Image (cartoon, rainbow, N blue to C red; front, side):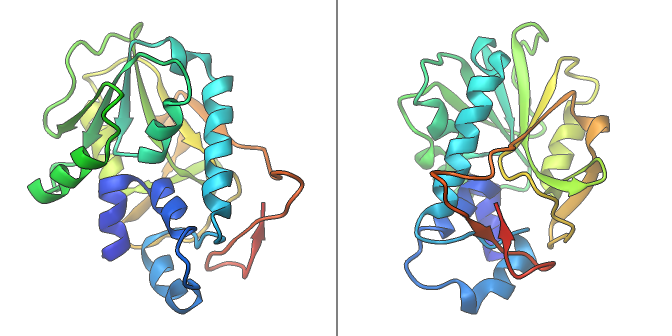
Length: 225
């Protein structure tokens, strides 16, 4: 579960971004990646650029991200926090993490969070205080599972269920890679999008600088985005 453990510490889209910068070809480990991640990213930093660009679009399009005093992330997604730094956002950010995350992983997560932004890490069963719907926004990240479903890590579903009955505001879903992923890697689950999320942001930007980019999964050799 090497890649899945990284997801628990960093976030799935952050891991895809990191893998896209590895200099060695991912071809030899493609099957291993797809056992624990929905996609194999294009390399030479292409996936990193694509994901960051679409996260910027989400932040700019969804005004409530910038207007809320408190953002609560369902699991870590460090590439999102790094993108927030490019904007004048002074919100408190809480990363809600699963109770299975051990102390060593928590320490690495703390060290990887940018220090120049107001971020805390809260481990279940604890939740942030004062989750007023008018001031707080819970934000999750997932993949389009097709037919109104979203693919998320099992542990993030546990986190969402833990907030049920404790938070009555909006729950935002951001999907920065918008095409259906029908595989279900180890440790992932598909959930009905409308059941868990009040608003879903799907990226519809399929080109960056006029180039075509390919992610790979178990269903097709190359998915052009």
